[in-house]
Length: 370
Image (cartoon, rainbow, N blue to C red; front, side):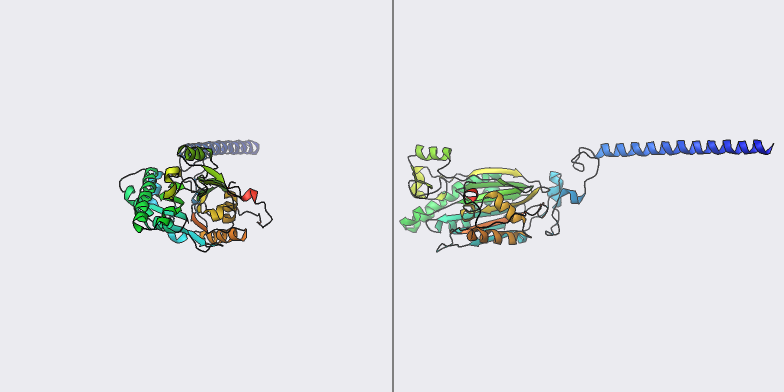
């Protein structure tokens, strides 16, 4: 064979080898693409791929805590509900209560582990003396626990507990022999957290509960005041009447600034009731930052979004509670100022507000009706 023919044969063989290699590479690439498509299809639309992007969810993308809160994941509830649920420890909950310009602090608050699966949070704002607030502070958790042992629906549990403790307080004050105690009353805003994910709130009066979700304040309660058309109609239908004081605040029978409360037995036959309004929320820990319970010493001077923004600037819930109670007094609140801050999974994930708050801000925009 000539040298020229041998060279042509070598070139031809080399070309065939390169062609086979190219075809093999294309085939492997196609198989890999098919594998990734199948893998994405298996993950898509599952709790491991909530946005159907085909990218498995990491712990970080769940938004559970950051380095400010170091708590484990609750395994049994997480398996039960199919989503990671962080443990909320009482040691992380922030609470603060300041007397303000009043002679006595009639606010009361509680945060406790009621049962293995239920946490209990409550604020009570007493008026006409501390007797009603003290009674609720001492016995409300017991009534709730007793009803929860028999009833699964926590909204029903809270409604029964509010009504029964009101009856028990009436008996207690009657036997005290002091007629003036019958005008003692209190607001009550209670939150139960079951399995770290089921949040149920009940309230009478004008203490509030708010949930911060994705940086926005979501009110979980509506004040029971005579300004509400439905409440005013109920008061009038029951034989009561509504008047306005020199500050433009509506009052039931010229005495009480709320239409629902525990106690205030001298106005029970004028439409003031102890039946709470309730609300149930399923938490999304990737987006929910905290729950805040506040009395009107704070609500009167700071609106819900402002409270949310200030708390999101804080390092931990204890600092947040102290700051909010102090800031309400600095803004001019003369009432007792009480707050509970319960952190959830997105604590620390929201960007801190760059707003600065001062005495020059509009009082109207931050009042109790905002």
